[in-house]
Image 1 (tube, rainbow, N blue to C red):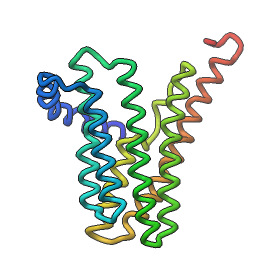
Image 2: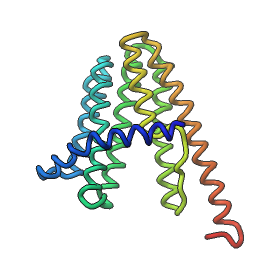
Image 3: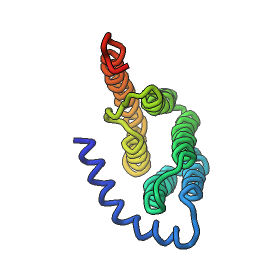
Image 4: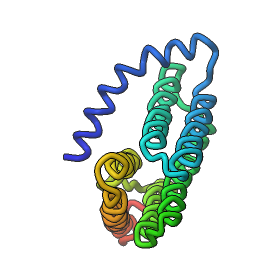
Amino acid sequence: MAKIFQVSVRAGMTRVVEPIARSLLRAGVSPNAVTVAGTLGVLVGALGFGARGHLVAGALIVTVFALTDLLDGTMARMSGGSTRFGAFLDSSMDRVADSAVFGAVAYYLATEGDHAGMAAALICLAAGGLVSYVKARAEGLGMNANVGVAERTERLLIVGVGGLLAALVHPLALPIALWLLAAVSLFTVGQRMRHVYRQAQQVDAPGGRG
């Protein structure tokens, strides 16, 4: 269900960003430039606002600039496909942005004296990196890990909603969202490792594809 929802949302957003993508390409802006600009925007929202307790502004800025992840991909497709360096840059900048978001949240909660919430943010930071690493490592070995309930979009959505609810409804909303995210992120790591294990068993078995 989560995957179907994500695909539907992405399809709708693609129709919105395509005119913007065409305009940027006509203006000579490259997909890589958009990738870097989007990451810088996330850094401003996370470190400049979120870490200082301005949760609403931080969440909104991060959300807007995180959407460039869809924009640069659309631009790459329209200009003939992503280059190897473009794919590498996009993945690397995603890790920088994610680290800034959860690092900023951990710092903010530490300043508020919420050590349990800070611990949850650090678990999310580590588990999120592991979710991405498991997939990348599997693909490097000729397998795939395209499973899981906590991919990057879902992770940013959960922490963003938690931040908004913490500012507008109740402060406990953010640590609750983080613990939920920590649980589903670790579950996703397990899902992906199990998925890769099954593929490896087939490849490594006598007479297997390997």
